[in-house]
Length: 416
Ligand SMILES: Cc1cc2nc3c(=O)[nH]c(=O)nc-3n(C[C@H](O)[C@H](O)[C@H](O)COP(=O)(O)OP(=O)(O)OC[C@H]3O[C@@H](n4cnc5c(N)ncnc54)[C@H](O)[C@@H]3O)c2cc1C
Image (cartoon, rainbow, N blue to C red; front, side, top):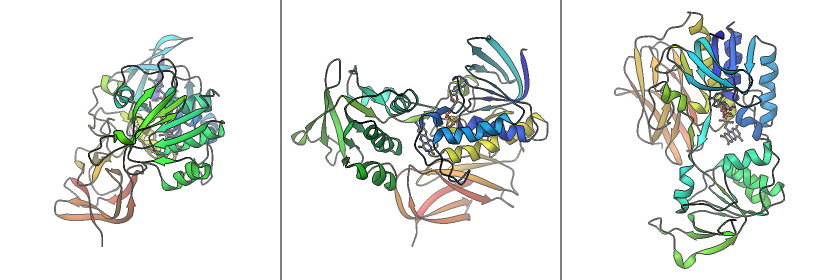
């Protein structure tokens, strides 16, 4: 074996950095394996501010947020190997790693934290546009953000953005800063997916029109994109041909679904959640394989880096405790089940009772004036009224499990 560690962390983004710091704080000999040349992950391409408001109580850019963690990590006993792609993790915690200088090598760890982030479901792109091939000028949001902010590329002169999540809104503003004319943002749903504050700050302030209930029906341009046809959708979600119009553009940014990059989890045969598409975990973020933990957008898609850091701290801490023989999961398991109106909950399992556990959940759609209930059998053991619930906002509830024996069911009901 080339290397032996208490805790090996796969991925050095927001999750890997926070997990490493927490593991090192417990005195664990910790290694971060990062496939890129530098640490930070997605944070490096988010040059706008809004990071760290909860974690550092400061308004930082993504790279500044990453730098805060890297500074702290450099003071701890954390080893870092960059350009190190983990190609396999075995159940007995042997990691196979490929690096251009060291070649292939293996790391034996007592515990592993999987923090390999997420990917975009690219098959959406051609399917949604009904095209078998695409001309030049079409980018997914994550790709566009990386090209503009991390590789300093100029994408085009006139842009259309399809999708209205927060990243799409931020990129509409970013393209404007880059000197492009953003013709419009189109959303096929009846309302924008991003926060109202981002619509105001990223679209309204720059006079960028937002067309909801609108589809891109076809593209013009064989080799290079020349424009898109857009049309409003009728009640049955069909484009109204009579109202179709042409919008000239050389750049189309396309929002596709983010999903955990689950390759390593699948190879490990971890138990997976069919909604989050990440591993099933308990409240320590331990997966179905003992000593293997998962966190960050590898576990489920997060909206805020600060949430990732808090969650990853838990994973790092318990990975260290596991490695030091100070933590083993309880045999008594409480299942956390997403009920009416809730699309998913993480963790999906809580060990034993008599403690407080934080459960994250996401709603399927936008809601006003709902009561969030946690049932154990017929009893409501936690309730909270929410004036607004948004699918783009991950919510959290700290639930007291003292004396709780049965499974928990999370659901929404009308609130007076
Ligand atoms: C495009 C995008 C924009 C976002 N914008 C914001 C925002 O504006 N504000 C906000 O608060 N939050 C934002 N978020 C949410 C939040 O910042 C991210 O969820 C968070 O930074 C993700 O951290 P992570 O460590 O889980 O994943 P990542 O940052 O993706 O890190 C994963 C790391 O793992 C590495 N890796 C992957 N596979 C391997 C492997 N096999 N071997 C070794 N290394 C590997 C990758 O290179 C990467 O560095 C955004 C998320 C995305 C995806």
